[in-house]
Structure formats: structure tokens, C-alpha cells
Image 1 (cartoon, rainbow, N blue to C red):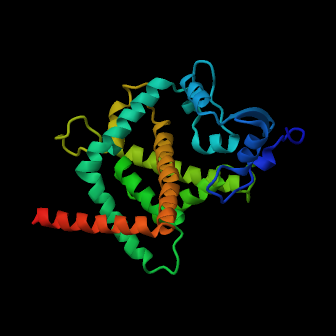
Image 2 (cartoon, one colour; image 1 turned 135 degrees about the vertical axis):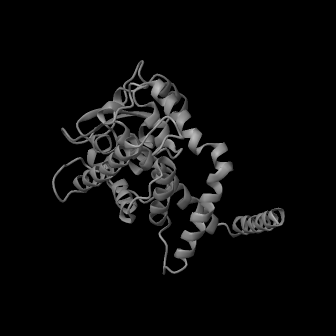
Image 3 (tube, rainbow, N blue to C red; image 1 turned 60 degrees about the vertical axis):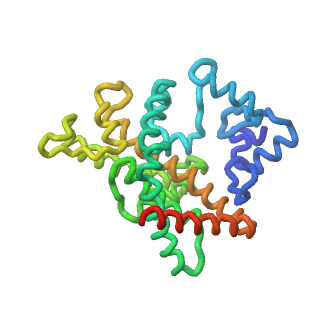
Amino acid sequence: MGFPLIGETLSFFVTSNSIDMHPFVNERLKRYGPLFKTNIAGRPVAVSSDPEFNYFVLQQKGKLIELYYVDSFSQTVHNDNLRNLGGYFQRYLRRSILRHFGHEPLKRKLLSEFEDVINHELHKWTNLPEVDVKRQTVPMLFDLTSQILMSHKPEKNLGEDLNNMLQSIMTFPLYIPGTAFYKCIQKKRKAIKLTTWVLEERMKGYSYDNSAEGCNRKGDFLDEIVGDIGKEAFLTKEFVPFLLFGLLLATVETISPTTTLATMYLLDNPSALQQLTVRSFLYMILTYYYCF
């Protein structure tokens, strides 16, 4: 299981630009099968690629198993209180998110807002000599998510900071000036400072009565969370900024690479791209016809 003390940590943290499974896992799956053990950062670790077993493990969270995160990921993304939250919090969070990102809000208003922002962004891309889709989509997604979550448009370079931070999450957790992990933590603190300020400003003018004078309600995700502070034990003024930060990070980290892969596959498949182009054109014509 690798070198003394550090185990196979160095191999685990080696970066890979492949869209395939990380070489660290791929090589060991071929050698040991779908379930094997290793040593990461001095800790014994079991790795499973068996879908049925993984599903069973996830179902037992908080019962038979306790979740563990590598230090760099845990210190970057997780607040200490997150580790102690159980299934009720997850169900609460899921319901709250779906009320603002689910099918109904998508159909009612989000799709049209997304279309306007995307068209504006694509227009800007036409002036660039080349486009790094993954990097360019991060600020756009960050702005959109910030608007839906907390009706706030952050400074431009914060989205870029988030992008750089994502590249540093799976690095060796050495908190020394100059290291990638140190820069990552500094950017996290900057983001938490922003979400804390937004929360404080919202709470100053919050009222359960929409018609109250000076009411600061905006009908977004943060409004719902602020309204439940004091009702739900896990929603505290210290925890909510970390929650907002985690949602921003999760949205960008999942959608940005998915968009990049979709773009790559479409460019590699001209016939599929042509069919999508025709359908998009027909949709525009029908939309114009029914509007007028």
C-alpha cells in the first residue's frame, strides 16, 4: 500500500486531463478488482466501484458507516457542523433547492433567464481567439447561481477565484504560503466573507410580512433559509454562509465539466450538431409565431 506513512498519497494526487476514470483508480481496479484497499495521507482507505455495494453504503450513512473526506476537500468545502447533520437536513435541503431550481421554476422563469445570459456570453466568446469552455462557463454559472440563491451579483473575479479553487481541492493539504492548498483556503475565506455579508444584510431588513415597510424579502433561496433560522436547529448564522458557499461550489463543479464534455462530443459528431441546430431553429420560429 505504498510508502511508509504517506502510503499511495502521491499517486492519488497526481492530476489527470483524461475524461476517463482517474489512473490511480483505473490501474488498481484492473489489478485488484472492484473492491480494494489503499493508504491515503496515512489513513487506511477502502475503494469500491461496485454500484450495488456503493448504494448499500450510502443508504447506511449515519448508521453503519461514518463519512470521511480527505483533508484538502474537507477543509475547503466542509464546515465542522456539516459532518454531524443527518438525513433530515438532506431532505430539507433537497426540498428547498427544488423549490428554486426544480422543474416548475425552470419552466416559469429560469429557462428564459438562462437563455438571455447564455446568448450574451456566447456573443462575447465570438471576440476571443480561442475558448476554454470549462473555464469560461464558471463565471457565468457562478453569476446565475448567485442570483437564484441570494439575488446577489458578485464581483467579476470571484467566479475566477472559484474556478482556481476547484483546481486545488484535491491537492496535498499543506497550509504553507505559496502552496496550492494555501491559496485555495484564502479564496474560500474570501467567498465565505461574501456570503456572510449577504446574509447579514438580508437579515437586517427581513420581515415575515411582505407588506411591511422596508421589507427586504426577495423570494429567493436565501429568503427561505432566513425565514427558517430559529425554527430549524441546524440553521444558524454561522452555518448558513458555509451552506451558500457549498451550493455555489457544487453547482459550478458539476455543470461546468458537463457542459465542456457536451460541447466536445457535439463537435466530434457533426450530424448530431446539425440536428440540434435545425431543432433550435424550428423552436425559434415556433416561439416567434406563437408570440405574435
